[in-house]
Image 1 (cartoon, helix red, strand yellow):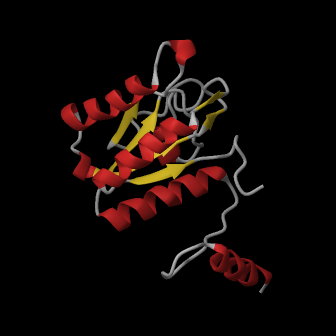
Image 2 (tube, rainbow, N blue to C red):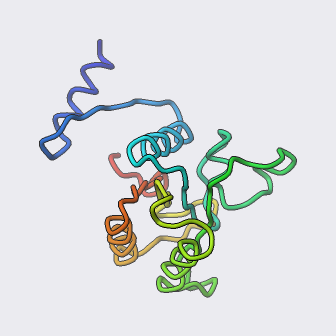
Length: 164
């Protein structure tokens, strides 16, 4: 019963006049994997874009989203398909916000059309990738790009702590 009450309270706090559902999970991996499943079901698309240097978890699909092989998916064989890698904006590594957006457009041109992408998954602050923060202006550009193409934007925000 407390679980149900908490979900009802959360649903009341979400702005907007539409049906709301809350799912409580144990791990961030479960949260991200379920967010991607919801995006795929809602958009009827199968592709997902994630960023270089990302860490999204240790479930099978979140391993595919994670932006490095060692130590996470080494020796596990091929990961699930339809995951495409964009550059994370990090001036320290020579990647500007423009470079990151251009890398998404390259995916659209060379790998998967925007109408085949269900979601873009990003850590607003990368932890495993080196504690790099995406600037608010980049996040707004990403939001706009997603809105233009009907793509869901999923923020895996464990480092930034939204809602804490």
